[in-house]
Image (tube, rainbow over all chains, first blue to last red):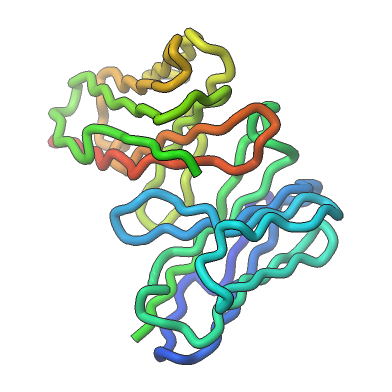
Length: 116
Length: 111
């Protein structure tokens, strides 16, 4: 497709379960980002992948969060032992390059995660 | 990321009115971006600003990059119902990849 695709669009899980969220970036975009958006708040940076460089994981809130990316394609964000405070919309975005060079982020529609 | 303060938090406006929102940062940025998010969707880029003092328009939208590099504003002229949504400012440094986002301005238009 032409845009960033995320799946599932909605996920309800019980506290303590693991969840896996998937992102398909725009073809040819070397940069991929995960952001978290809590209700009524702005976007919180989680992790960034750029080509073959080591990912920037500085935004991951705890060691229960991890993400992988295969080459310059699909990425998965995994949350282990989910907690209620993990409930949020998880947004994936991709871009051709860094933000200051005229390569804007293109966002997917997000995965709404609800932990009960 | 850096702290961005976006105001107002929300606004109700009459169709046809002009609206303005702004964003300030605790430190300087080299890039300011404005996004709009519709319900159930991801944010979509509206305007990108790369130079201090730059004034850029996109249809009824106008945004400016403040000369101090610590602020930006977005104006919407002659608002229409489809302007409803959440508007986010975001900033970063040149060649950086981490965007810092404001908390958003929720716009509701009264017909």
